Amino acid sequence: MREKQANHMYFKELLGAFFIYFIVIFLSNFLADQMTPQPLRTLIILAPVIPAIMMIWAIIRQFRRMDEYIRRRQLENVGISAAMTAVFALSYGFMEAAGFPKLSMFIVWGLLMAGWGVTDAVRCWQEKSA
Image 1 (cartoon, rainbow, N blue to C red):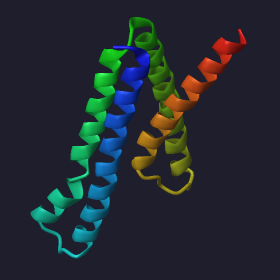
Image 2 (image 1 turned 30 degrees about the vertical axis):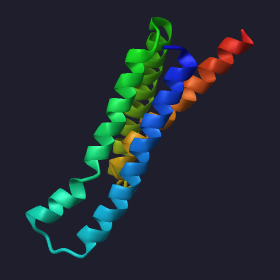
Image 3 (image 1 turned 90 degrees about the vertical axis):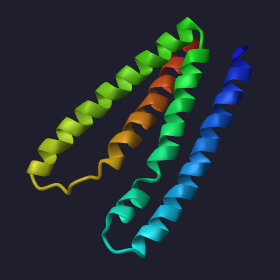
């Protein structure tokens, strides 16, 4: 499969999963807000995990479609991003002990994804400049 076709398929799969995720998140929040604490409410709150797994599946499929060089480069980018996220999480843990407000765990995922994107962009820019 050509790279352009693979990327098109990836974005189609990933954006479809994102779209479903946002719909499920809004619906689950709307329904859960109207319920008293009970096991069904917990299941409704956890419902967005299903489309999140669909996003993971789209990413796995894209990695399998990549050639070896691009796959290795992207895995390095994920590793760099994970290291940056770990340093932030560790540093902020110490800052919380100093009285900073507690952050939601949702921040970690967002930082990891943003770090992956920034790392990829910087490395592409460096490669073109060299």
